[in-house]
Image 1 (cartoon, one colour):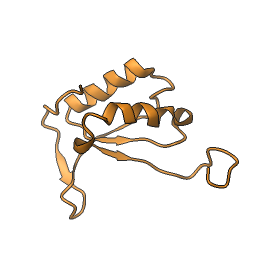
Image 2 (tube, one colour):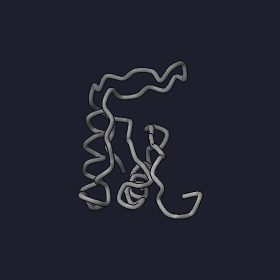
Image 3 (spheres, helix red, strand yellow):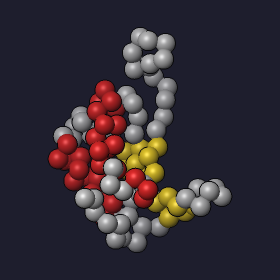
Image 4 (cartoon, helix red, strand yellow):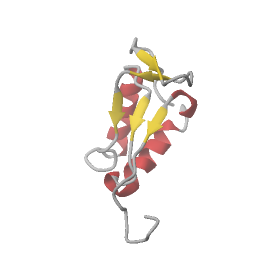
Length: 97
């Protein structure tokens, strides 16, 4: 179970979508690299407690491990968070990588 969004983090709307984004986002580059699964969970839960609902990730972070960990962490609150990503660097030699 993830922490509840209890802080008064300011939010703003994403255009005219009705989606509200916290003013701060948590980058997950260290999930699976500098931060193991337990530490990643603590960072994620602390961010949620602070009112953060935006989490940035990329397929190249920790060889994809950051995405796997973040996916596990948002499983119970997926309708409450926004996950952003980016794509540029190849993750392998395959044309689709």
